[in-house]
Image (tube, rainbow, N blue to C red; front, side, top):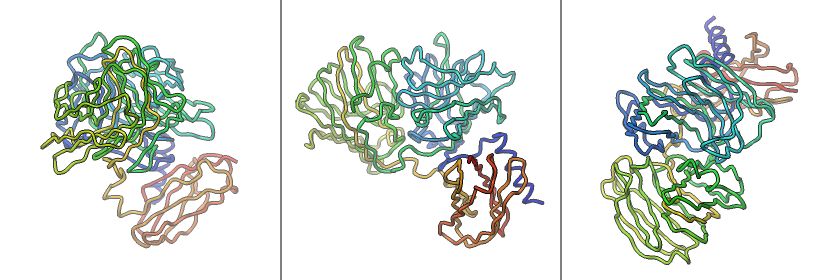
Length: 502
């Protein structure tokens, strides 16, 4: 009776998506409740005015005046299906919001204001002030306080299903037909703002994400910019970003003419890192501003190398946008085609080094560096330029990934792990992998959408060995099914969705 109840509860949850559990092709989960100061490590904030803190099990963003700012998770770019859920405090003060995924040009997510919430998407944002968005669906402002909000996607065949949840209830869903690949990867983004430059106060209680990493290598990433929607994240001046920072002809281009107070920046797809090096093949015909490469928490906490004319500077910022110089030298930038910048940590001391064309140029040390300078995300860009024509042909990144394994839950280590079937959807056959830390036996159970058992198979799970069930799906009708395993120790809580399409 208990097993049947567990299975039915599992099906009910997945059928309604009421708890946003991983029913799709996810490989990782990231969850934090901000109980420790370090839980904010690796997050990235575009805000220039906000104070970021962790207190009372909340990530608190407090800004006395700000039009709009964005928050990125420490995870870096993701791909495929995802589930993104946040819980906010009751005293939040925001009027505009976005939650979803952003590639270099593409966007998919929730947009909300005081009138309601819409799900929107675009393959080419065109402009950040007046984006060219397609509305998938919208709802009026819910007649309730929003404690949790989530967006979840699931690809079935060539279509992408998108779900909106409010307070753990499914509010609305829609389907993007014949979805293009560019919409299926990018970086997870939260955006918040206020009208008339009003204050913003945002306490976040919890973040719960299911995802698959875009770059599975934990130590290296290279981009030759053959993909015009490579999942770098653009930030800076909204007026200029779309037309002045772009990818084409195998180059990341910074092309700008105008106000010298401009800022054009790009955040790498790899997420938060510790030690790292960035190796760039670059060219250009005009650059009269400041070029920089660094690891960043927000605009007031970062470490960087920057260039002004033929001067090279190493420095950092800790609480103020202006960096403190720790060393500098003169170089002939006209002959520089390769720049390498590395940061390594010994204890709480940081060593910064710069190489041009594989020749050592400059180094410097930050002794007893503050916590917010010990990790962060890698950003490149230019600012304070009235004329700019610079490009990167290739960027190579080596790094120590901050978030290495997001599935480390001690409670789950005592249970076998049931993985998502591959392929899914499936036609003739599909494979289901099960891993166990001990030897056991039991049953594989397949149920239809109504909860009736349609297939069982006895299984013997070997210790520390991949166990694979090859399921013949030709015998079943098209539709949505669910599967779970029951061992001699009891039913496994994990329940997965399987889609059959002949």
